[in-house]
Amino acid sequence: MAALPRRIIKETQRLMQEPVPGISAVPDDSNARYFHVIVTGPEDSPFEGGLFKLELFLPEDYPMSAPKVRFITKIYHPNIDRLGRICLDILKDKWSPALQIRTVLLSIQALLSAPNPDDPLANDVAELWKVNESEAIRNAKEWTRRYAMDN
Amino acid sequence: MENPRNVGSQVGESDMECSDNDNDCFDDDDYYNAVDDNDIEQIDPCKLDPENFNYQCLGEEQVERLLNESVEYLSYNLKITPSLAKVLLLSHQWRVNKIIEKYRKDASDLLITSRIKPPVTPPSLPVSRYITCPVCVIPQPSEKFFSLSCAHLFCKDCWVTHFEVQINQGISTAISCMARDCVVLAPEDFVLKHLSRPNLREKYQQFTFQDYVKSHPELRFCPGPNCPIVVHSSENKAKRAICSNCKTVFCFQCGMDYHAPTECSIIKKWLTKCADDSETANYISAHTKDCPECHICIEKNGGCNHMQCYNCKHDFCWMCLGDWKSHGSEYYECSRYRENPNIAHESVHAQAREALKKYLHYYERWENHSKSLKLEEQTLENLRSRINQKVMAGVGTWIDWQYLFTAASLLAKCRYTLQYTYPYAYYMDVGPRKELFEYQQAQLEAEIENLSWKIERAETTDRGDLENQMDIAEKRRTTLLKDFLDF
Image 1 (tube, rainbow over the protein chains, first blue to last red):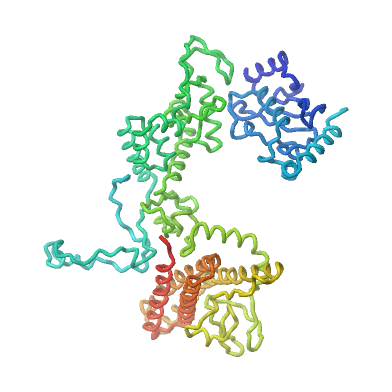
Image 2 (cartoon, rainbow over the protein chains, first blue to last red; image 1 turned 45 degrees about the horizontal axis):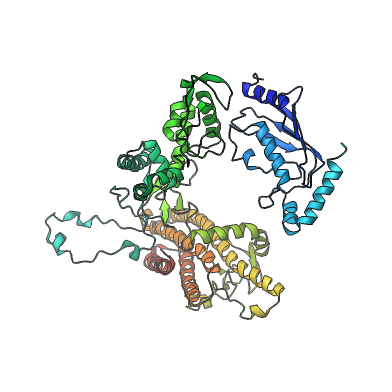
C-alpha cells in the first residue's frame, strides 16, 4: 500500500490533539484509513444519552472522493437506513475536497439534531416521522435506550 | 438565424419517393422553368407527407464544425474565450441570440447564473511566496497555485487529481471548483491546461462532446449500438429519422423507436405500463386460438389476421374471432374498443375489471401487430423461396416478381404505424375525435390485412390488383397521420 498522504496524517493528528466535542474518531491499528468513530447523541434530541458507533473509511482517492461512513449502532432515523447507510448531501454530490473528516462528522451530528424526513432513506421511518412525529420520536428514544446505551 | 448553414434538404423516406430529376432534360432558359412565370404556389411538403422531415446525418467532424460555428460566433460577439462561450452555450441550449440578448441586458447576472463567475467577487488576497494547499496540506511556492474566477487557490497536483477522479466518473462539463459550496465551473481550457495524460485528455474531450450534443436541441445521437452518427435537424419534433450508417429508425425528439402518431410522453407511459402489466397480459393472450367454427386449435404462423381454418376453410378474424365477411365492409370495427356506458355507477371492483379489460383490448392489438411484423419478416423469406421456385419453373422472371418485395416493405411500414395507433387510442378521451380516429384506424387495419393476405398468396398476374391495394393502404396511413399527427 502506498504511503499515507500528508493530508490524512495531518487530519488524524488534529483529530487526536483537538477532538470535536461529542465525537471521537480513532484510526484502526492495522489500517490508518479506517476510523472507529463514536458520536454522542446531541442534547434535546431523541438520541440524547446514546453513544453511536460508526465506521469511517477513506478511499484511495480521498480527498477527491468522499469518505465512506456508516452507522454500526442501530438507530431510528429517517435519513439512516437499516444497514446504517446515511443520506447526506456532502457524502454524495455535494462533496468537496476541501471538506474534512471533522466537518463530515459534525454534519452527521447535526443530522441527528435535525432529521430531514422530506429527503428520506428509510422510508417507513420517514413516513411515521411526517404523519406522527411524537410516535416517531418515542420510537427513536426507545431504540436509543435499547441499542445505544450501556454498551 | 443561429446556424447560417445551408442544410441540404433530405427526405427521410427513400423507398416511396420517385426521383425528381425529370427536368434535367430542359435547358436553363427553358420557358416553363422561368422564375418569374412560376405561378405555382409552393406547397409545404408536410402537407403532402405528414412524416416529411428534413435532417442530415453527420459524422463527428461535421458536428464539431457545426458546434464551433456557434462557439466562434459567440466568442467573437462577446469578446470572450471559446471555452467560456461553450459554458454559456451549454447552459442555454445553444441559443446564441438569447445569450447575446441576456449579456447585453446584464452581463454580470448572466455570468453568475451560468456559473462562470462567483455570486460575490472574491477579495484579492495578498499572495505570499509559500501557500499551503487546503486539499493536500503541502506548502508550495505560489507559482504552483491556480484558481478559477472565484479565486479559490489549490495546487496544480490537486487540480489534476480532482479532474482525473471526476473524468473517471464520466463528469466533464460539470466539473466545478474544489472549494466547499463553490459552484463555479472549470471551463475546458482550464481543465486541458492541467491535464497531461493523453488518454485522459481524450476521454475528457469525448465526454464534453457528448454533453454538447445532448444539450443541443438540433442534434441527436443515433441510438444504434456503437453508432457514431449524429442527426441534425432544425425542427425539434417527434419525427422519423433513419441513420445513414446503421439504418436505425428512431424518433428525433426522444431517441426511442419511432412512434407516430403517438407522442413521446404517451409512448413512454405506454411502454412503462406494458412492462409493468405484461405478465397478466401475456397470461391472458395466449399464442393459439381455436377455430370458432370447428374448434380445431390454430397457431398463427403469418402476419395476416384474416385467418382461414386449414381444417374447415372457415374465414375468420384472428383478433375478434368474428366472421371475416363482416370485416370486408366499412363496418369493420374489430379495432374499436366499446366502453361500458354505465361504468360510473358500477362498483370499484367492476371498474378495475373494466380498466383491465380496456387495457388488454389495446395491449393485445399492440402486441399482435408487433408479432405480425415479426412473422411477416418470415413471410418475406418464404416469398424469396417461392419466387425462386416460380422462376425455376418458368413462371415469370426474377424481375417480374420484384414488386412483391416493394409490397412487403410497404406492408411493414403500414403495420408499424398501425401498431403505434393503439397506445394513441388508449390514452385518447372518449368523444367524436376518438370515434373518428378509431374509424380511420379500422379502415387502415382492414386495408393492411387485405394487403397482407394478397402478398402471401400473390401470383405474377395479380400485380395490378396488388399495387392498387398498396396504394389504398398507404393512402389510409397518410390520411390518419395527417389528421392526427400534431406538429
